[in-house]
Length: 436
Image (cartoon, rainbow, N blue to C red):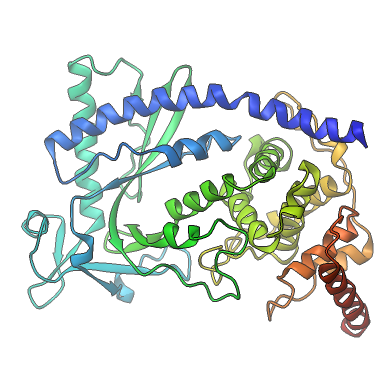
């Protein structure tokens, strides 16, 4: 048991040891990017420079892969004076995922900071003399400013040759991608214009609100709406920063919660990806799994040790892969696995193999793809993971406690929870023969 614990912590230790160097790369790249954005702001004051980038740095340090860093650029506009309208069918882009809630941002009447926009090419007429902000034209304007700022900063020797590459800027993209050299490592920043607007804190249609989270964290994370481009004519609500704020809240709780995320993300990058480490499972998916596990396992007793904490995330991830359904934490009706298709079945086998025999995977392969062979859970565990999901009845603490028990990592002493598991398992065992 002691050797097993040492193996988990040794693996985690190597992951954590890399974070300081990753942060140094990020800070250097961030300094270059801020120099560029200051030049953009000097030429066009309607694009603001936000120096509070702690959440992006926090996420970059956690992630094992070289995923792009999303960077929202606020517009100087009174978002509360805008009117949010549903996009018409003709405005909704066909390439966007189905179910994506898109909207138009209408300037009802000129007000503080609105005149600058209503008199410019960034607005389209929408009837009655009112205008709507056109994200496509705002993106094009920002793109031209970025290219001009790069040339300007290089002429003044504020940037060195090779510091920034704009080769990934695409005409039809809803973000502006820049490659920035942070020391010897290049980091991709996806720059997105954002309109901020105050809103009523999100009321989730569940029995709990802040269950498992620090008090008030959900309210603080969702009290401001962020609208980012969805198409040349439509905007969408972004949950990127609210999710990071919730993760920051999780970091204040006791137990190795974020360490569990670090460890699973390293496995995703090293063993669970496709060719070259890419695959259907992303760091964003794992962030959602951690948030769900924080709500579904709210007791400090659930987060006493690293192995048990990792399995709290694993049982939720396995359930989502088996059913090909991962609900968004803030918008549960949205399935984040929609469209992933056949890749999820292969991914399920890899994650299941780790859950059954983790010691085989807790080692670094130094560039070699380490997954080989497979190890399956027993028949009953597989049947429990694939129970129907229609009514949402198998998305609660008792169900996932039952899965932990199947993997023999359930050490909860709470008699009420143990009784709930026993009742649920007895009920399911009576029903499974009827379903087969």
